[in-house]
Length: 558
Ligand code: ATP
Ligand code: MG
Image (cartoon, rainbow, N blue to C red; front, top):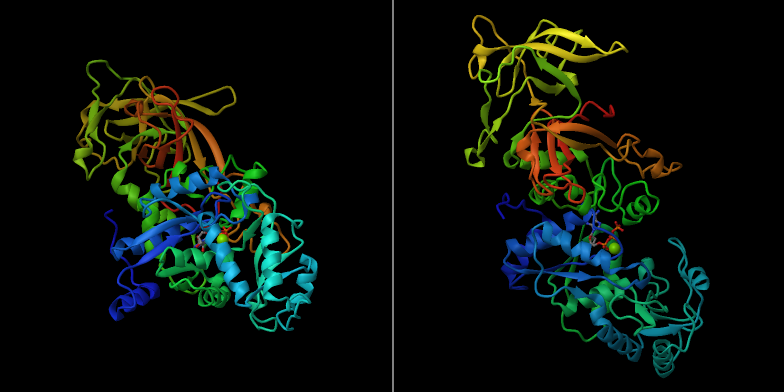
């Protein structure tokens, strides 16, 4: 990976100190997603942090699925997550880990806590438990079952496991402090009874450990040195530490919290993203408008661009809502250097070159990138009929207009200067076609005695290939779609977030495989669609990002 130098942040400082003091001799991190949806840009931040630290410090990073909620988890999600991590350019150490692999050990540690008088079986119903829990300002009350003896607790817990009790009828709880100001310490549930088929363990277990209990033990079993999570887990840290302090496990990772990534004009919550998919508001988890890694990839974003974004936004504890334009700028910069440049016309206007002459009017070769001669070149064919962009012609030019206008001249990129001699209209009076003449003295040189400043892109109508071009825009019209008290985030869906047009592209792209990126000159960066594009047959391009930030002046629609 040829990424930029890492930016120092407080977690790196902690690691530097731990290595200097000898507390640790290496760095072991993990990325612990729950396979209950596709990953989004926020997860990308966490992936870049965890895998990036392991790379920078010569340590390792595990991929561990937090699969403790069997009803919501699927193998499809797990596979998509593995694909995303690899696509982003990272490799986990050894095999993928699953929290469910630790179910036997987790169970043993629970018995240890019971034997130490630190956990008990509770018969309160979920509603009663809520009542007993107290509030932020009032302490909770002890459950009447809190005083059960060790033997009774062990017996009941084993029978919970054996399936003797109904779902939800009993729980195993840590015995900590019902009056703690930290609600997470008010005898948190460690295990619940749930008859649900699990993607890995099938029907082997009828009791499932809770996330907080599972997570710290999984970290310790893997010898994680620094367990990095988002700020909402700060109040859970005392519980993380309590569990590890009270079992005989011999490893105690340090939990460190950093702020979540939030982005303007989008949502980063799996629940909301899955709602968009389930309600058919988008075409799926990998719809190019989605902030999912799958969606961004399909749209044409690059892994390098996303990694650079993660580097630029940095790591801190302060809340940060980042504008989408920051991400787009990283993608644009990466593509600027990498994407070959070709011409395409997406809103075509026909131009007839009246003095085109076979054998006299010549085509030129053009390089695919001004700074990368090694990208090679191709012939840009010309013929008597060409397509230009409708926007590049006007009959009422504003001041400073440098493109085509009746009687005016413009250069065709990589070709001749042409003059617009005649405007042809259809029955509705709309401009249907232009008649232009070529100045044959201008191929590769300036016209004599006058300046022609404007240059427009174009394609030969005879040679160009038809292409479906999907123009994407922001999925939401509001910077914080889920930040309004009385409005649903769906109210802010951008009705113009997708526009499909039929355009024309240079023939040299004919055989481009799916996921090939180009700059369409003057239009933006485009990527052949992963699913619908068929080389040599059906060309489908997704607009990845425009050349300039068109939203800088405020939303205008497409
Ligand atoms: P969501 O809140 O979208 O449902 P989650 O936190 O439940 O996501 P997990 O699968 O548990 O999703 O997340 C895996 C890891 O990614 C966790 O360590 C979590 O802290 C981190 N993560 C999730 N969302 C973000 C975010 N917006 N910014 C940074 N890290 C995140
Ligand atoms: Mg989570």
